[in-house]
Every structure is written in C-alpha cells, then in structure tokens.
Amino acid sequence: MTEIPQKQVTIGKIPAILWGEPAEKLYIYVHGLCGCKEEAESFSSIVCPRGWQVLSLDLPGHGERKHDTDGFVP
Image 1 (cartoon, helix red, strand yellow):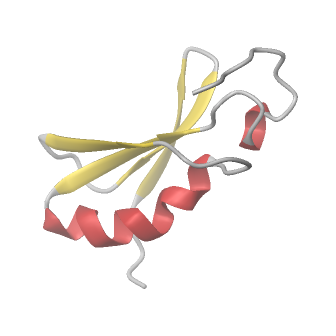
Image 2 (cartoon, rainbow, N blue to C red):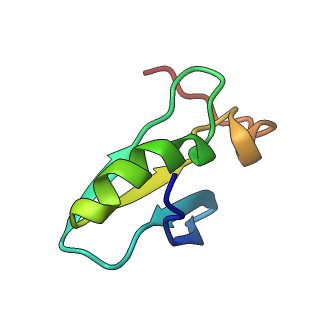
Image 3 (cartoon, one colour):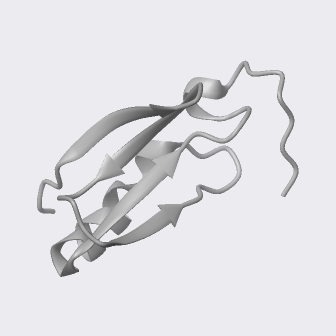
C-alpha cells in the first residue's frame, strides 16, 4: 500500500485526519460502528492518487472521542 500524506487536524474539538495532497475534490469518510478516523487509510490510498483528499473524523463515542458524553445516533 502506498503511503498517503496525512495531517492531524482538529475541527472545533473534534479530532480528524486530512489525507492526501491539497485538492479541489474532497471525500468525507464516515466510519462504521466501533470504528475510528484511522480506518480511512485504505480508502485514501485508492482515491488520493486520483486527485482527491479525504477528511475522516472520530464520531462521538469512537476513537479519541470514546469517552465523550455527546450522543450520536445516525
């Protein structure tokens, strides 16, 4: 798997990762149940070389936000 550049960012108080080189097109990656923002790595390795960036974030109760009291029911 090709190494994709990644930048740790915070949106408000939400930890996120911006994958790939700067681009005009962006996917927002939403992980599944019990997932985390790092799961976007495989997806990013496919789309970033094709001119996209990917933004992945931890939903409440997941990843770095595992202990957040904010609820989220999709």
